[in-house]
Image (cartoon, rainbow, N blue to C red):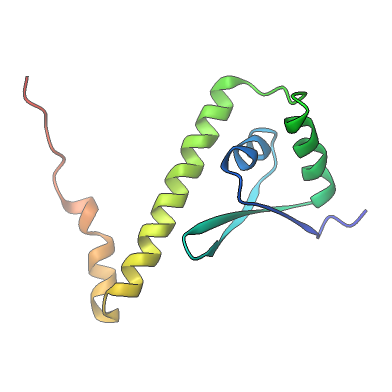
Length: 110
Protein backbone atom coordinates (compact mmCIF):
# COMPACT_ATOMS: atom_id res chain seq x y z
CA UNK A 1 0.00 0.00 0.00
CA UNK A 2 1.51 3.33 -1.09
CA UNK A 3 0.45 6.05 1.35
CA UNK A 4 2.48 8.75 -0.42
CA UNK A 5 -0.24 9.23 -3.03
CA UNK A 6 -2.23 12.39 -2.30
CA UNK A 7 -5.98 12.78 -2.08
CA UNK A 8 -7.10 16.18 -3.36
CA UNK A 9 -10.57 17.69 -3.07
CA UNK A 10 -12.04 21.14 -3.45
CA UNK A 11 -15.15 20.13 -1.51
CA UNK A 12 -15.11 22.04 1.78
CA UNK A 13 -17.43 19.58 3.58
CA UNK A 14 -15.49 16.52 2.42
CA UNK A 15 -12.27 18.13 3.67
CA UNK A 16 -13.87 18.86 7.05
CA UNK A 17 -15.14 15.27 7.23
CA UNK A 18 -11.67 13.87 6.50
CA UNK A 19 -10.19 16.12 9.20
CA UNK A 20 -12.94 15.07 11.63
CA UNK A 21 -12.10 11.42 10.94
CA UNK A 22 -8.55 12.10 12.11
CA UNK A 23 -6.72 12.63 8.82
CA UNK A 24 -4.31 15.56 8.88
CA UNK A 25 -4.59 18.22 6.20
CA UNK A 26 -1.22 18.35 4.47
CA UNK A 27 -1.69 21.64 2.63
CA UNK A 28 -4.07 23.90 0.78
CA UNK A 29 -3.21 24.55 -2.86
CA UNK A 30 -4.69 27.43 -4.78
CA UNK A 31 -5.76 27.75 -8.40
CA UNK A 32 -7.00 31.29 -8.74
CA UNK A 33 -9.56 31.73 -5.98
CA UNK A 34 -10.31 28.01 -5.64
CA UNK A 35 -8.83 26.13 -2.68
CA UNK A 36 -7.81 22.49 -3.08
CA UNK A 37 -7.36 20.49 0.13
CA UNK A 38 -4.50 17.97 0.02
CA UNK A 39 -4.44 14.92 2.28
CA UNK A 40 -1.85 12.17 2.49
CA UNK A 41 -2.85 8.51 2.05
CA UNK A 42 -5.27 8.29 -0.83
CA UNK A 43 -6.67 4.84 0.02
CA UNK A 44 -7.71 5.79 3.57
CA UNK A 45 -9.13 9.10 2.31
CA UNK A 46 -11.16 7.34 -0.39
CA UNK A 47 -12.55 4.91 2.18
CA UNK A 48 -13.75 7.80 4.36
CA UNK A 49 -14.94 9.71 1.26
CA UNK A 50 -17.11 6.76 0.20
CA UNK A 51 -18.54 6.40 3.71
CA UNK A 52 -19.30 10.15 3.66
CA UNK A 53 -21.27 9.93 0.40
CA UNK A 54 -23.04 6.72 1.46
CA UNK A 55 -24.13 8.41 4.70
CA UNK A 56 -22.18 5.86 6.76
CA UNK A 57 -19.59 8.20 8.30
CA UNK A 58 -20.25 8.68 12.00
CA UNK A 59 -18.68 11.89 13.31
CA UNK A 60 -19.54 13.94 16.39
CA UNK A 61 -21.43 17.10 15.40
CA UNK A 62 -19.21 19.33 17.58
CA UNK A 63 -16.07 18.00 15.89
CA UNK A 64 -17.40 18.57 12.37
CA UNK A 65 -18.48 22.13 13.27
CA UNK A 66 -15.05 22.85 14.73
CA UNK A 67 -13.31 21.52 11.62
CA UNK A 68 -15.55 23.55 9.33
CA UNK A 69 -14.67 26.70 11.30
CA UNK A 70 -10.96 25.85 11.29
CA UNK A 71 -10.92 25.27 7.53
CA UNK A 72 -12.84 28.48 6.88
CA UNK A 73 -10.43 30.47 9.04
CA UNK A 74 -7.42 28.94 7.31
CA UNK A 75 -8.85 29.52 3.83
CA UNK A 76 -9.68 33.14 4.57
CA UNK A 77 -6.33 33.91 6.19
CA UNK A 78 -4.32 32.27 3.41
CA UNK A 79 -6.35 34.01 0.71
CA UNK A 80 -5.98 37.40 2.42
CA UNK A 81 -2.23 36.94 2.81
CA UNK A 82 -1.86 35.93 -0.83
CA UNK A 83 -3.92 38.86 -2.11
CA UNK A 84 -2.15 41.35 0.18
CA UNK A 85 1.30 40.20 -0.86
CA UNK A 86 0.43 40.48 -4.56
CA UNK A 87 -0.78 44.08 -4.24
CA UNK A 88 1.72 45.50 -1.71
CA UNK A 89 5.33 46.47 -2.36
CA UNK A 90 7.80 44.08 -0.67
CA UNK A 91 9.12 46.63 1.87
CA UNK A 92 5.59 47.19 3.30
CA UNK A 93 4.38 43.57 3.48
CA UNK A 94 5.65 42.77 6.97
CA UNK A 95 4.20 45.96 8.40
CA UNK A 96 0.70 45.39 6.99
CA UNK A 97 0.47 41.75 8.10
CA UNK A 98 0.43 42.92 11.70
CA UNK A 99 -1.91 45.86 11.12
CA UNK A 100 -5.05 43.89 12.07
CA UNK A 101 -3.50 42.71 15.33
CA UNK A 102 -2.75 46.26 16.44
CA UNK A 103 -6.12 47.85 15.69
CA UNK A 104 -8.49 48.07 18.67
CA UNK A 105 -11.60 45.92 18.61
CA UNK A 106 -14.89 47.68 18.06
CA UNK A 107 -17.35 47.71 20.93
CA UNK A 108 -21.09 47.57 20.65
CA UNK A 109 -23.22 50.07 22.52
CA UNK A 110 -26.44 48.93 24.15
